[in-house]
Amino acid sequence: MPADSKQALVAGLALSHGEQLQRFLVSRVRNVCDVPDIIQEIFLRMLRVPDHAAIRCPEAYLFTVARHVAQQHTLSQSASPRSIELQEMLTELAAAPNDPALEITAQQTVEELERALDTLSSKARATFLYHRRDGLTLEEIGSRLGVSRAQAKKYLAKALLQFRKHLEAKE
Amino acid sequence: MKLASSHKLNTQIYSEASDWLVEFRSGDVDVAGRTAFYAWLRTSPEHMRAYLEVAAIWNEGSRLDPNRRFDDQDLIQQVRSEDNVVSLEGYDSPRSPHSPLSSSSAARQSGWRVRLLAAAASILVTVCGVWAYSERNTYATGIGEQRSLALVDGSIIELNAASKIRVRFTADRRNIDLIEGQALFHVAKDKTRPFIVNSDQTQVRAVGTEFDVYRRMNGTTVTVIEGRVAVLPSSTFAPVTQNSPPVTEGGSNLERAKGQVFPGRNSIEFPSPPRKDRTTALRSSGNVEELLRDVKNRRNAGQAQESEDGAAKGEALTGDGSMTHTGEFLLAAGEQAILTTEATVKPKQPDIAAATAWTQRRLVFQSARLAEVAEEFNRYNTRRLVIKDPQLADFHITGVFASTDPGSLIRFLQARPGIMIIENTHEILITQRSE
Image (cartoon, rainbow over all chains, first blue to last red; front, top):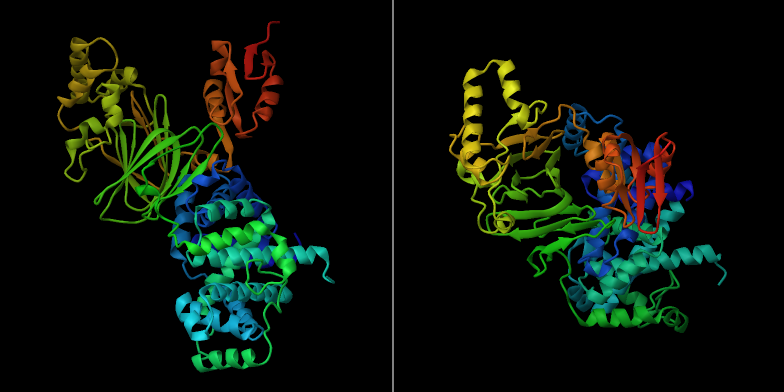
């Protein structure tokens, strides 16, 4: 995994998964070499589930696993987790919901995404902003733009892909 | 295509990831879709990575353009003017196999997705969060299998290998029966509905916290990672506090099935003289009153029944006033309690990381008996470790092992003088070397 995509991944994971994971990953940005291990571990755990049909929501499951792996990683990093240290660590985690470092990373990403808005096709841009910024339903967007629901979904996916491309080019 | 093949592949993965994300976010994924998604996700770490990244962008999308640089008029006008010129569909990627506007080459790419998405589009399904109310509210894992469960209240249960739980949610309680094995609970906060784990006769009650419960043959170990839990050692003495709701409506199925009253785990000891040593311990501490009470207990127990456990002792303890049986005690983060029929022990410096190492498929032993080590490995491997010589059971092991690979343990044992390993297809026998 090249270093730049590692960075992108850290930023990506940090944005997507819960406060604890965010904090953890942000604190790891200085030590990016851990991230491929984390990804690998998440992947292995996804592989290990033999009865995948029983997973009600594989998407939620993925995020859950990701969170757990990060948590376990944090735990295993503390060399001798005596009760006091662990308690301190947890208190510390709970007490810092607005990590400035995290805010900076997230803010930079948002700024990049703002720039990427200009590179979207007009339909993709309209659909994405209506849905994510304004909270319109797919049906509402469809009637506003004169497209079907399925097409609206397609524009959403296109917007995502284009955002991703833009971030990748910037890394 | 002029694009390098790796880049092309990359784009395709991200394109599929985006499609999947939108499918999930629009609630259009059915059973077949979930299976297909899972298969897709497990194709490679790249797929998973792409999905996580795209999900992050999606989440962040709600923060975009807060100042409405693009207002409603702009957005619609841009779309109309574009429609009047040329369709720019697909300018940004060779993608969207299910798109009605997609090229024939895209349609060729993956027929299964076209079928899948056509099917998915026709049915609206709310996918997530129906675990606990399903008919199958008992969840089990086999040897070597681990599993995470998301409950409707937002709590997460990680179930270790060879384990089984039953979920029984009611309006005012969230009941979990740990029928066997071990589970790690990440409890969602809900003060009005306590989260209660029943393991054997032990009840662990939490409001919002994270803790691990391990039910073994001879007792239950409770380890608190975050927050605080209340442990009620024996549910046969449930009516001791007003705050603790009765456990009868099914939580005690197991007890009834076993048809016996359990001996009380009525004391917390630091560290843990086993029950039979208790008299001595008390004598040296000089607490005459307690000593007498203890002796009386034993006599009562002895009159009714000679055996160490069973109904008689339970009765004796019940009749012994509230002091020793109110029982309920609190465990805070970083604390652990080991409850057996003899006693309740709170180790002074519990190894919390070791207690949850199983979630990383690691086994951590600190001066553990070989018998215990073998029992642990046998939860993860179908080829069983068998100790042939009872003398070896007390051999002590310290170390960290991969739970699914007894190989390193075997090599370690083989290097010990006096130990011999005999392997066959379904067993690994540990015996004493005959010199």
